Length: 64
Image 1 (cartoon, rainbow, N blue to C red):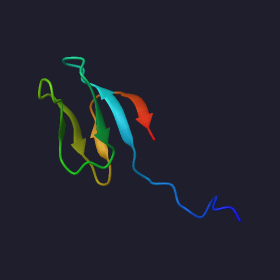
Image 2: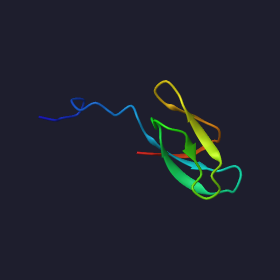
Image 3: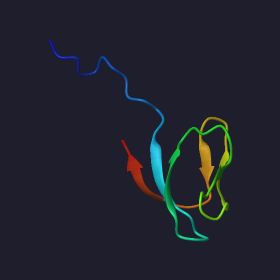
C-alpha cells in the first residue's frame, strides 16, 4: 500500500527574501509571530498578519 495522500502537506513554508535596503538575503518563516527584521541592517522586512506574515519585499525562492 502507498501512503500517498494520507499525510497532509503543511500550510506553512520558508521563504528566501532579499532586503531592499542592503541586499542581504535571509530565510523567513511564513507564519512568524513577530516582525521580521534584516539581520544585517535591522530594516523591517515583514509584519505579522492574521495567520501569515505580510512581506515588504519580494520572495526570491520558496523553500520546501
